[in-house]
Image 1 (spheres, helix red, strand yellow):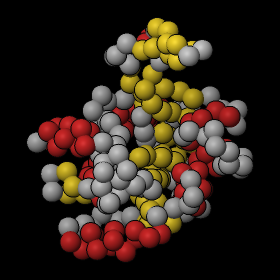
Image 2: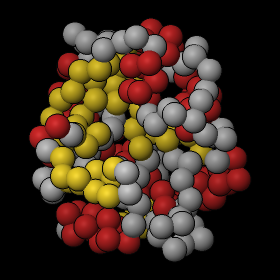
Image 3: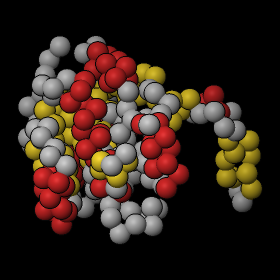
Image 4: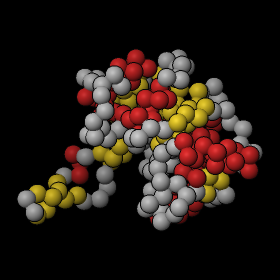
Length: 220
């Protein structure tokens, strides 16, 4: 297939972790989450172009971590913007792949099969995202009360979200607004169809201490 660029977004802070350290830098099995995320893509294909978006204030900290952990996987660091949208737009300037994937820096458990299916499917489709079925019962807030809804009507969205380069570039010609929840929603707004594939259940976004413990257990 054609060449691939992956934008790994790492602009989060540690509010829900109750940590002064942004969550992407917290350790799981003695290594920063962000490094484990990057490793997943490098193991899948060492020729992938890796672009990391980081808050300007944390670039030096990341450079120190690279030395401390002797982390040698090639990647470019790009300054993040005010919102995820602006961070991705900054990174797009440097993407040279035929296909572009956007992945959360705090999803270090994305599986090989998920990556393989995403990148194979995007050859035939404009946009591909991994999803996972909802297993819990759901209720919806409505007029001050809650009502039961069918969980079969809903899917949990994961990353990487993968796109033909021309599709994502076209979508990012649209101006920012605060209803953009992810890249797929922006691409869909631009008139393109989103194709879903089955993700892997453990591909969670680490946002809490419980998530961190789960990831630790899974890696062990």
